[in-house]
Length: 132
View (cartoon, rainbow, N blue to C red):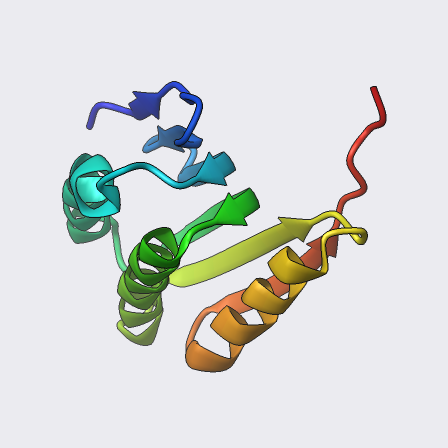
């Protein structure tokens, strides 16, 4: 299966999904004008990927989101719900929600997401941003 690589833009995150390593990464800000359209290939890839996993496979998801607008928040919850469904079906999924301790909004968003998920492992990972 092909990997999915989407470079960041001013309003969208970097997407790095490696099928062989079973490592999915989304990093950056997400406020595209049309979040549903931007994430359509992401969902298509994810559904295919999850459908091809062997039973009891493990997947790591690293999310380092600096900002989500309301439509991206809804899309992210749908993304996490798909992963949670796969975990309910037996796939071991660990989601690492990376946040800067100075960005309370992102921490609270991760906490809210974690309350909605039941089968996957959701870890809040403090990752201070490097000063420039």
